Amino acid sequence: MSLATIEHGEFLPTQNPNAAWHKVCGREDLVTNSGVVVWLDGAQVALFYLPDAEGTQLYAVDNRDPQSGVNVIGRGLVGSIKGDLVIASPLYKQHFRLKDGSCLEYPEQRLRVWPVRFEGEDVQLAVE
Image: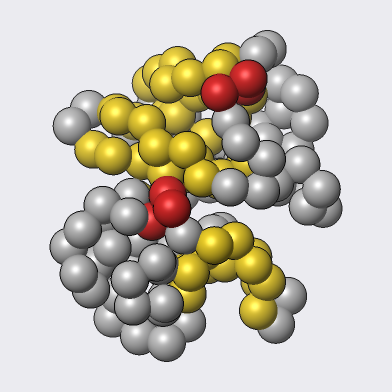
């Protein structure tokens, strides 16, 4: 799956050209360098807006921590490890890459990622 918005209205394509895009919030609802959780088709999705990052600025990952089973990823700390932007789970402190959801400490753990983009002032997620 692809992620992200680079600039206003531009996005990387999803693997599925027939994916349906859904508005989940507005740009004004995002918190810079932090997480915001939205609801999409029965799933909690954590959005991370990093306007100072090069390239991708907007990420969407599962809010459910795979180790604890608790919906807390949106409250995690954003950081960088070896050049990868990561989110640290607030419970067990494992680190997940924002670009693909993989866990640095436990390769068997992974967060689902969603294609995400800005469409004007709307934040949209793709359901494939």
